[in-house]
Image (cartoon, rainbow, N blue to C red; front, side, top):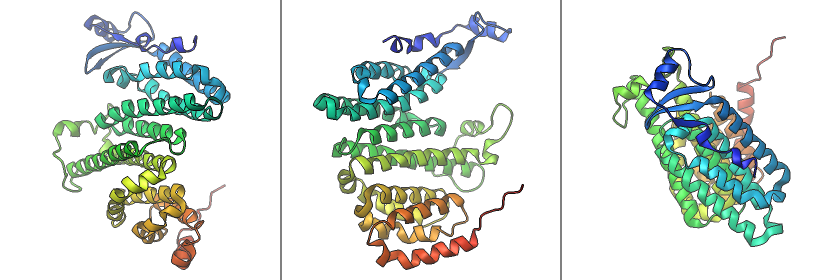
Length: 366
């Protein structure tokens, strides 16, 4: 209870005035740790010292949860309520205190994992708590994810949802929940691809699919005058966000394979074929999805192999190291299924041999 009492956002972020901003501009504030920042809801005063303290509290909670596991059951519900109060803050506050928000996500995932491990000793009570924690987190963070436009925000949100779902355990989600989560994930992946296309179009690479405003283009330049678009950093951030989103699919494969195969896989298969058919950001996404299918569905993925396996074998010779690595791991996973040998064994052996000859390890200088 003493630790949970420290999880109060009002100690970190408070409403500020123009006088506070003027005081900071003149070289100081009332408190050395205070920063006055603009948000959509007006000026706020951020106590950086208190923020550091709260990050330490969340980290301490993580230690308690991981080390005690099911023994933490008595405090799981109060902990969930305290963490939920942080996530329930206004978007403008969470944006300012994004480090705290992002630290809550893995802590919540650990809480779900501990509650799942408590099911053998606490029965239906623990099982109900797992369902409640998963539903509460997915509803809140899923809603935030649907509104988010910054890939730096999207990636930790997606990673959090994937970890929470995965830690809930097998058959912890019902079919409608799986369908809803996968639909949201697919929608966010498509939005990411559209944002990336718009940025490339603005740079003259290709025509954007969505209208692109000059105001958005101004965001490509940071405070030091560096053009992030020229450096390709926005594309990297969008790619990382899509990989994190793809991990949500993997979590759904793991916890509810039947529901996923029945409701979501038929929608994803034609998209995978499209993504894998051409070079670019989509192919890496398709390879990650293929890898997750082989890892979590095992023999159940055999019927989907024709959708992606030929492209996976071709990607073993890709110029992109990420594509080669993902394709190689996919082959390793698929090869554990007996049907792989007769169908793809010889071609996989040839493709791997060719890749090894083409991409030799670089020597590290002394």
